[in-house]
Image (cartoon, rainbow, N blue to C red):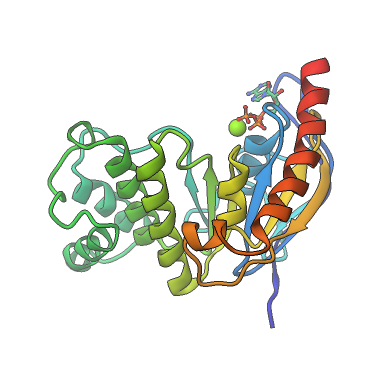
Length: 259
Ligand SMILES: Nc1ncnc2c1ncn2[C@@H]1O[C@H](COP(=O)(O)OP(=O)(O)OP(=O)(O)O)[C@@H](O)[C@H]1O
Ligand SMILES: [Mg+2]
């Protein structure tokens, strides 16, 4: 039986300057779910991921992780793929993965085998000794995925993870991530501005309102798994879901621009 891993009940989040970013926001996520979050720029998507990661406290309401109130960062609990590169520039791809293994408390003797295994899985077996500056944008994202795999957290937070990539690289890396995710079905919160990507990747897509963000609507993605991006885009349920999502979101983006 699946259990609730993340539960936000009517939370409000204020930034340090008092600015209310999210208001009366509720969302329940079950273990193993792949949940997309879309919404107008500035509506509070990143703020929500930050709160789940324990980087920012909730001002009111209740935010539970695995049944316990989130009170700060708990190492090992969530893996966070930030929008911008978060690799250590002075460490090679291999070194970056080892940093995650060290943080996780994996015995040093196991690092070489584990690091090489995850780098191989993301297709970087031949580039383990490259520094981030010697890798392309797509390859750096792959190293970050390898770091996540090494870290192996129960929850993965992804903030526009593939937004900066060209369309072809992006489809390949999305397919890779879908395949890797299918191997152990971690819980994923996936923020994106790309509605097609949201449908291809996710089980459900949460649409947020214009700022201050709250949940406007949750759409179930009626597509079978396992799936690739192309299979998803040509499946029967894809276009109707895209139309519903797009109409719902456009209204909120319109409200944001009118503010
Ligand atoms: N550190 C901060 N201090 C004060 N206000 C902030 C801070 N970070 C974000 N905000 C504000 O909180 C609101 C939500 O920001 P957030 O970054 O969560 O939006 P977002 O939905 O992720 O937007 P985008 O799609 O552009 O990434 C915005 O109005 C933003 O200006
Ligand atoms: Mg953001």
